[in-house]
Length: 183
Image (cartoon, rainbow, N blue to C red; front, side):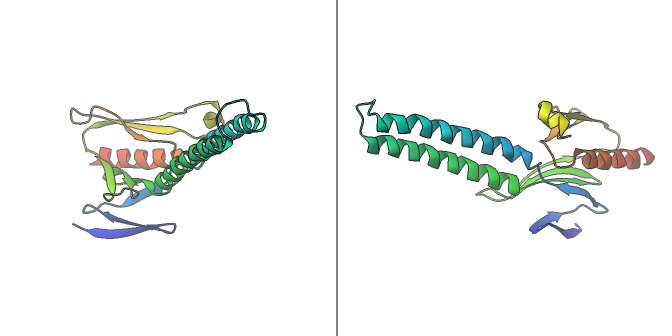
């Protein structure tokens, strides 16, 4: 096997390439995917503090203020943990399109690196569809890419969730289709 290493930004990706395989596109999920997480967490923290502070000040519950503060801090700690995990997962997940495969590579796993890959067949019919999740994503041109290969082996579509540049991935996939049709 031909082994090469690909450097993407400051993250070192070691990827075993097949013979005569070249990388066409490497990217992450769009950063706005984290924006909804941060907005949700901010709103939850505001709700928790705006409900806990009056309870403590006006002593509306027969529970001590230390318990309410402890519960609020525990809730915020859980939110921080979920937010950190989501940010790390976003940072260490890459979408890779090569001339022979489509790969989702996650380096943020306790056990090791997780690969989800789809080998592109020469004679299989391939369908690419771009889908937006909501109106904001539609305005910002942020789309999920569903790749369906019509074979019995692969019943479900391969999904790139909100990549940074969906047009580049679609162009790379169309280049692959053109190359395969010539063979």
